[in-house]
Length: 243
Image (spheres, helix red, strand yellow):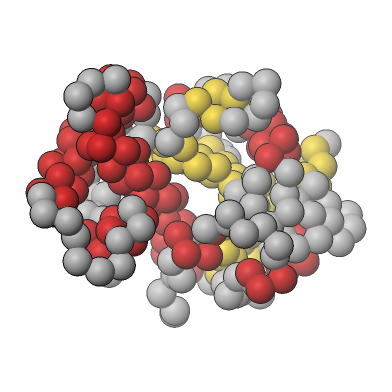
C-alpha cells in the first residue's frame, strides 16, 4: 500500500509531514501482544482496548519530519555530518557504509495524550491508563514507520534506496548521542525538546537516522548479536515492502 503523505518543505534540507489523516489502526492482535496476552482475553478487555484506542487517537496531535544531510564515514563507529560526529557505534555504522545521505527524523504524538494518561492513572481507571500508554507507544512507532515508508517511496523515484531506521538507545548507540541529532535539526523540531538526560519531551516520541544511497539496502536486524534483552526494535519496526 502506498502512503501518499502531504509533505511541507521548510527549507532545502528540512521537511515536515502530515500524518494525522494517514495513521492506520493498530491491529488488536498487536495491542494484545504488547499487553502480554497471547490467548483469550479476560472478559471486557476487548471493549477496553477499543475504547482506549479511540481515546488515544482523539488525544494525539502527530507531528513528524526529517532533515537530509550528506554524510562522510570516519571509522567503523562514527558518521560525520558537517562538523558533527555521530557516534552510532559498531553495529549501526557498518550498515550505513553505502549511505550517501542521512535522514535525521523525529515523530511525536504530542503532549496531550501524555497529560490525559496521567489524569487517568490518578483516577478510578488505572487499567485503561496503562492500555492507552501501550497503544500510544505503538502509535509512535507506527508514525516513524510511515515516515520511513514515505521516505523510501520518495527516494525510489530518484533511484535511491533506504536503510533500516535506527534510534539512539538501541543497537549500542548511546542515548546521549540524541543531542547531536537535535543540534542538526531546527530548535524544538516537531515540538520536541530534550532534557538533560537526552530523553525526549513529549515522551511518546521517536527519533533516529535512515541511510539513503543508490547502493544501500534494507537488511534484517542482527538482533542475535545484541545482549540487550529489553530491546524491542526488531519486533516494532516492520520491513519495508520490496521494490
